[in-house]
Image 1 (tube, rainbow, N blue to C red):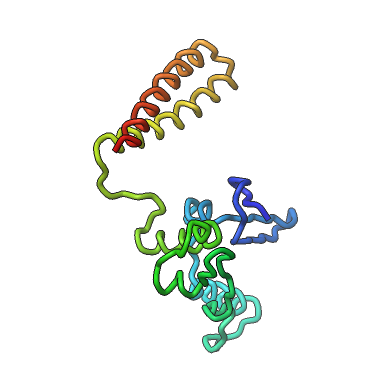
Image 2: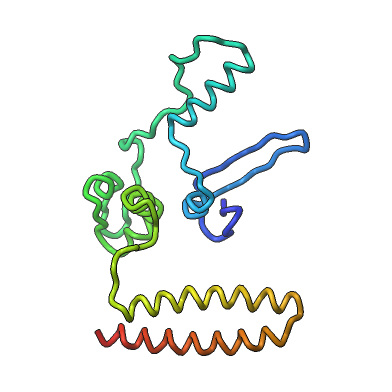
Length: 183
């Protein structure tokens, strides 16, 4: 099942909300879930269900019940088809065995990176020309969004100006990429 927001990646979190207007289903991939601020732990889920049942059935001593159980690592039998690296090896060693491992364990690797860095993007220091390429890519994305807004509002004069800026930024990115390739 695909993510409800990006419509590209496979959803790993499935939320169902029952309202008087019917059922709402939300499916989230890891990236969109993190972007939207969803990071519920097993303890959070247990508290949520305990409070819900305590209020519905007026039960006072509900603290001994566990509604959500943590996933046991031994229950996961995922492995890379190329190098046969297992889920447990990736979790324990923080190492992928081959390039295919990155696609097989993509969501797990993202979770490990997010857990260790509180972000999925690299925030360390880079050489100046790499920062320029990265900044130009971000600027390019912003300009493309601006261009689409101007096209939708039929503001073609501004759209033409933004189109020209996009061409300039693309040239700067190409020049930076060539410089990276040389080094």
